[in-house]
Length: 162
Image 1 (cartoon, rainbow, N blue to C red):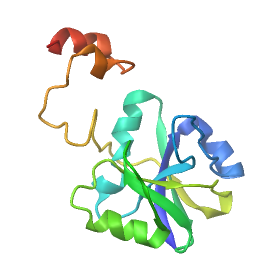
Image 2 (cartoon, rainbow, N blue to C red; image 1 turned 45 degrees about the horizontal axis):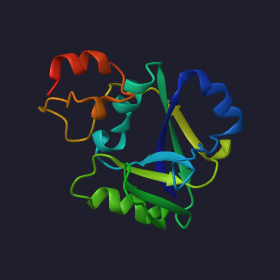
Image 3 (tube, rainbow, N blue to C red; image 1 turned 180 degrees about the vertical axis):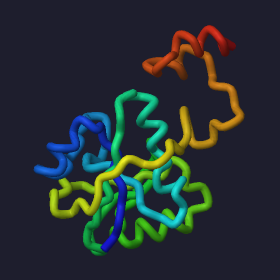
């Protein structure tokens, strides 16, 4: 069985325990499904999306650890890039061997049943990246295009305007 983690708002805990995790639909996405990260030996890579998601919706977050059959079809790829269709077990192998796993996401194209949820927990510390996976040590771009719709964009535009 392949193991993944899904980050969600703490207020949804009771609903997720009872009903499972629903498919997130978006018109602009080519693939709709449940967004997860593969569980690897590296804690940072497993929970990398935690800080980025916290940045957009600043509410308390929890993590659901889920198991799905190894032969289940999933899609893996970098955020906002093309995804490839593979089996769940191969997706975990790809994540473990990837040279730059920052920004890697897996999409499960179906809902997760409540029986597939192994554990719900609050990570002991916030890890991950903000803005983009390789942003550490770099100043954000202050142009209106890059900051359109971003949180705290007014301050960033003022401080880092080109």
